[in-house]
Length: 182
Ligand code: HEC
Ligand code: HEC
Figure 1 (tube, rainbow, N blue to C red):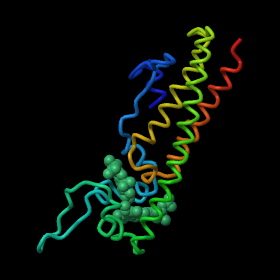
Figure 2 (cartoon, rainbow, N blue to C red):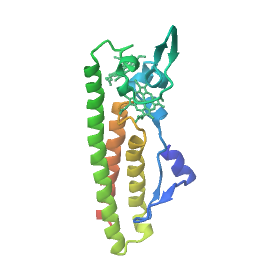
Figure 3 (cartoon, rainbow, N blue to C red):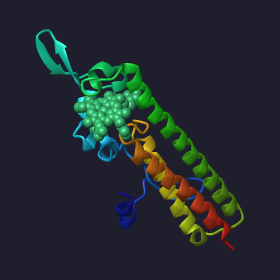
Figure 4 (cartoon, rainbow, N blue to C red):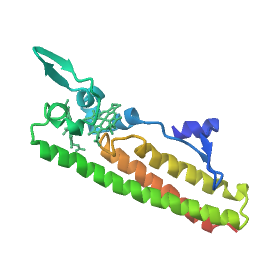
């Protein structure tokens, strides 16, 4: 996605404080799910978010689309024959770890933004900052990709961690590139 946006020179907005050409990740649930263990096992969105339920003698799919963690019996235990608490705990462990990595990525990005603002105040030009602003664009898009995805890592835990690690690295590389400015 990023390679495509770079190729066509697209930006959603310009960062007010640094001037970086920014991107907005727009709810990539499908893309994230497609990298996860459930998609590999053929488990679809509707299996978890619209599980079957009984209404009288009929079996229908639940149209109250919501968090499956509020409905673990129907949403998960059809496949996972383990206690509800255990399933909830496994999902929440993934989410807590993802949220911690997300916070690290956001802190790194804020550090980079603060340093770019400082460089601007010291007279750094657009040309000098081009590579650094590209790191900000990447770091921001990557952390936003996980945040805008809404499952806090559950749909694909390892892929979420990978994307957040890349984001942290982009921010820190941006800071290193700033140190090399004259
Ligand atoms: C294996 C079960 C499972 C599958 C398959 C699945 N999800 Fe989810 N989804 C979850 C869980 C668990 C959460 C986290 C809910 C929470 O944090 O309360 C979630 C969260 C979400 C949310 C946020 C909901 C909220 O109430 O905050 C959206 C939107 C979503 N999923 C969409 C999708 C889409 C679209 C797909 C298919 C491309 C999909 N999900 C596939 C289990 C699943
Ligand atoms: C339609 C069947 C199905 C449903 C519904 C389903 N799962 Fe799964 N789940 C699987 C399969 C299959 C695997 C992969 C097992 C494997 O490959 O070893 C899996 C794997 C997992 C894992 C291990 C993930 C990992 O990275 O190791 C967890 C945790 C999990 N499911 C929790 C849930 C929760 C919570 C829900 C409900 C929100 C749910 N599942 C709904 C079939 C399902």
